[in-house]
Length: 87
Image (cartoon, rainbow, N blue to C red; front, side, top):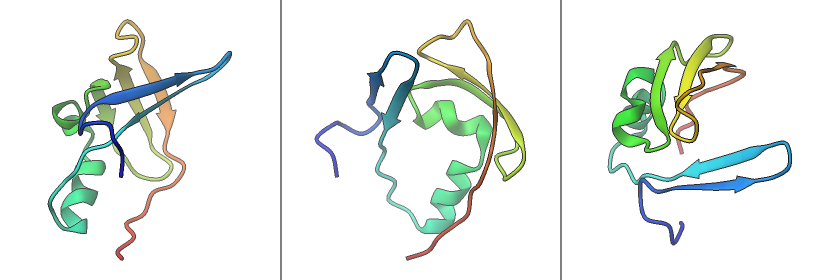
């Protein structure tokens, strides 16, 4: 996986963009992980980059995100795709 500890965010900044990544080990089955990833209200409990996340996380829906990187702004994002893939 990564040498970055669970729950620690890393950010890469470029001139007109910023990418933030976070990893968290979840010792649970795929259905439980999918439920965590699609329940907006619980994101701040396990993702240190999220102050709040509101909305329905499903394709075509819009969510409202407040990031720890700039808590004075609210970003409205459209979910393009999302599906549970079991391996």
